[in-house]
Each structure stands twice: as structure tokens, then as C-alpha cells.
Image (cartoon, rainbow, N blue to C red; front, side):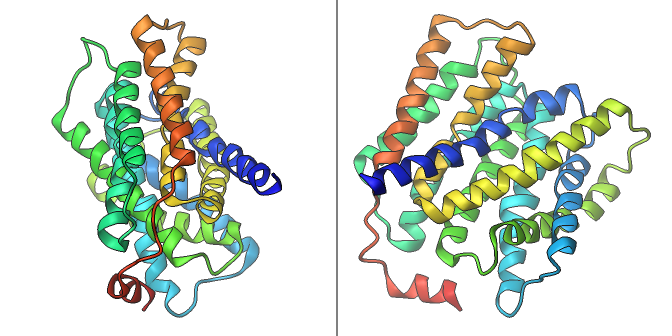
Length: 300
């Protein structure tokens, strides 16, 4: 009972990260400067990552330099850039639906890379979650942009792979330090590319600064720390299912803030997503017969 209670608390705490990320769409469209997705992504991650790293005065060592480069790219640099590209080019519903493929990708990556064969229930739950998000956020008038859809799917794949590598490698430092390293690496990689491709902001308003402050402290620093803690405590696939809560929260914010309404089909979508998340927390992947070669390679 105690173990089940502890795991339940881990699930609930980890769920706070995608709940915070669910606000990204409305913040990006209502509070942040337009037409600078990569620069927004860089400034969301780099300042908070640098501040935490300076505070703790601890840097990676040995093998963790290149591992941080990999994780910083996958979890922050690539993912954040593509997230904002999708957010700017697509309606929030389309972007959320494309991103909802992540649990299925995590199950697939875990199977191919580490031999963690998924159960049928895990696959069905992942597919159901994708369908549920589609029912929740898509509408007949939804505009499909090829670049935006590709960005959302590749971004989901990037963070999905980053999630299983984070789980496999284990963190070598305190949670906040480990989080800050990835934020700083991702931000450093993004910033020069963003400045070359998009150029600097022509102006920043008080509203823009408020948006950056919220995303930096709550939507990035705190949320990623909670997410990486969850990866420590739960299976990679269980954590990825929790990511499905983001579009649900985004829809609820639209209902409360933008006076949007829910149709019966959307309510069915919410029910399917929540059921998928619940089932995803009950699934277990078989990891006792991992092939030696991939695991050995990743530990070098």
C-alpha cells in the first residue's frame, strides 16, 4: 500500500509538468512576440538554465559533457524550437494532435533501442490517446500546414527519444542542476541559429516580458525539473502518457479564458484521453531481457 501510495504521488506530481505546458499555446499566441519561434524557445530556456547553473556552480564532467549535448538537443533545443514553430504555424488543436503521437513513439523507441517489448494494452492506450486528443481539439475548419505538422511530429519524436535516454542514463547530479544543464545547452544551441534565421526582436513590451517570465520560471524551469524527476521515478512510457494532459489543459484554458465551448465530441475526446493516461500508468514494459549491445553502447 505504501509503494502504491508513493507511486500515485509521483504520478500526480509529474502530471504538473504537462499541465503547465498546456498553457504554452495561449502564452505563445497572446503574450509573446510574433514570428520568432526559435528565439522565443532559446530565451525560454537559456536564462533560467544559466542562472541555476551559476547558483550551484556545478558543471558536467567526463562522459556527461557529450550526454548533455545529446539530451540538451533532444529535450530542449530541437523540441522547444519545433514546438514554437508548430504553435505559430498551426491552430493549437492541430499542433496538440500531432504532438500527441509522443507516447506511441516512446513505446516504439523503447522497443527498438532497448528491447522493452510493449504490451498490447500500452499500444492501444497510446493510439487511443492520440485519437482522443484529435476528437478534443480538431475541428472541420482546422487549418493544416505541412511545415507546422512536421514540426510538431518531429518535436514529439525528439522529446520522446530524449525521455528514454534520460531514463536509461540516469542523472549524475541533483535534479535542479541536471535540469539547468539541459536548459542551458539547448538555449546555447538555439540562440545563434535563431538570431541568424529570425533576427532579434524589434521591440519587447511589458506583456512580452511577463510571458517570458512565466514560461521561464513556471513553464520551463519548474516544469522540466518535475518532468525529469518523474522520469527517475516512473517508466518512460508512463511519463509520456502524462504528456497527453497538455492539450486537455490547453482546451480548458480556452474554455475559461477565451470563452470557448465544448461540444459532445470534445467531451468524448477528454474522456478518452484521461482513460488513456490512466491505463498508461498501469502498463509495464518487459525490460528483463534487454539486448546487451544497445545498452552497452549507450553506457560508453
